[in-house]
Length: 360
Image (cartoon, rainbow, N blue to C red):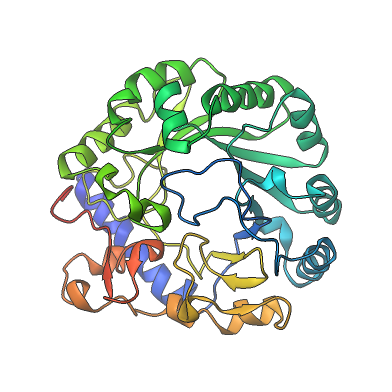
């Protein structure tokens, strides 16, 4: 019988082969993100997209979004693709329920990320009728910390109202809370666990604050090495506790001690092989958290056929472009392939976040 580390190493090698030999040659669209708006009623200190008060100029119209959804539903087997709605705060999009009701009528399975502050019993019921199956609501600490971090008065209470309305109305496959961990809320995780575990949630997603977007204006909030280990140990300890699963996000290779211990499977950056996105202005990219610059924008649905772009572009995400700088000769490169694309420094050609030397 293999030791746990030997088994993990075998799994990681097979996953690396699958990534290199299959997915990079024949990518499979599993997650299609649609950024409905960059408007938001919060001003979160970590926001990767720096959402807030923005101009509506160049935003896709309802008709353009519907035309894209219809065409894509005919070009792909959408029964195998999850439509992921995001923003900004998606519920601020005018005619949100008309757009999503149309997506549902076409057969899309869709979920949403939201700050939850606009959700009450009536909105939860409308989301259910529009076919939403999953939702992740952001709550970033106990009341005072959450409201400070998200710059929203009564934001915690409003988000918890949203969570309770979603659970109460039922009919959703997965109601999840997501928490971004930083120096001011790390110590609150045990108390927050006790609170959230009583709310009927299926899972709690815990992720660390990343040095992207607006977070670069407050780097003093980023976790240091010891604090990162503390966060991962908390997740590992509470991973399978009932009644609420605790999971880490999709980012970063974590080494043998933590891989598969804090999330369902092993690290694989999905950008451009499983995941694509359409931004508020029609630009086509991979993960929406990736820095938006010429080499990461693959086209625009106003001028390009999305299916053709998915099949024939995304070259940067389907090659070993990260095998340079500190990653060039790293013995872990086969497993991490340079790490998450959203935390890659495209100017310096190095990872902004790497757990080597921290977790392994």
